[in-house]
Amino acid sequence: MERVDLVCLGDSIVYGYGVSPRYAWPYLASKTLGINILNKGENGDTADGMNVRFMKDVVWNHPKDVFVMAGANDILMGIPQAHTRESMDMIIGKALTAGIEPMVGIPLQVDGAMLKDCWYSFLGIDETMALFSGYREWLLNYCECRKIPYVDFQKKFPEYLAGKGISRAFQDGVHPTREGYAVMAEIFCDTYRKIKGVCG
Image (cartoon, rainbow, N blue to C red; front, side, top):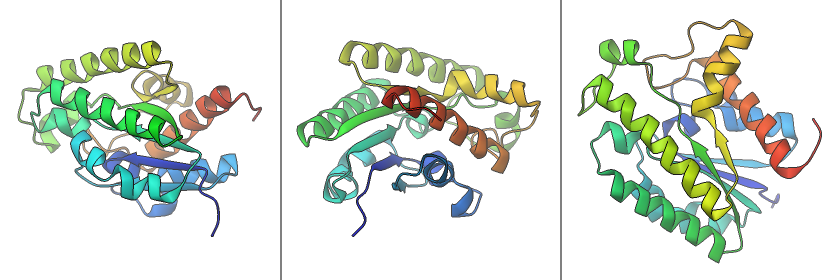
């Protein structure tokens, strides 16, 4: 069996909702980096759900590294942030205990204008966007305190889009388009190389 270099644990944004598997960003990243990435994204999953399936989806696959991106559905579903943070901390703890190096993904900010027309949230648009921003700040602080590497999709996504002149990168305000997933793959690869100290 081929050695798994990295498991990507996440929700629909990791899974690649709305596009075929070969356009999901983990698959694109695996081709660019030349490593074996196992996509364990599940549509609609929460941080708690990922914590529950961590052993089966991550540990039993014996990867060297695990990338975890959770929390977006928690916000959209109105799950208390304290619960999300606890679940994330448990996931990181399980990875470290298993000798697997964790890497955290900071979820994309939603597109408020599109979200208003295309997506249902338990909260208002402004409050939803504020929670995504606040969750980013918590993750940044958590990762810095724990010395956990991270990929800041929330910050870099609009920067990369602007640099490429891409104006529409979401299907519905939450899920990226095919172009959007390609940009996510590029962000991941650029950050991964810096974390691992390898040249492109």
